[in-house]
Figure 1: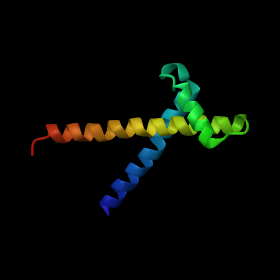
Figure 2 (figure 1 turned 180 degrees about the horizontal axis):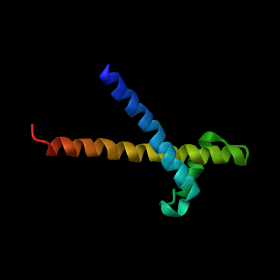
Figure 3 (figure 1 turned 45 degrees about the horizontal axis):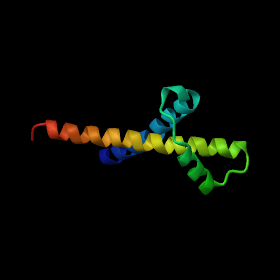
Figure 4 (figure 1 turned 120 degrees about the horizontal axis):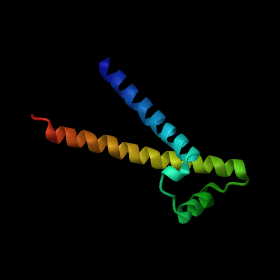
Length: 88
């Protein structure tokens, strides 16, 4: 049963942490690097937003996905480093 709780906690963390980071990024864009215009144009061509509200949804979705990738890389990278440091 303990394994299920660990998986559930990890799943919740992987949803909420990028959500919080994306929310902060949208509110304070000067604290993060700019996403290239080519990526926005490509994403908009796939999403085909028709108005400003859909464009804002696309912006949040793209930033959430970038946040998810960054936080996942940090999490799994730190687990790998800890596993290498920890004695067997």
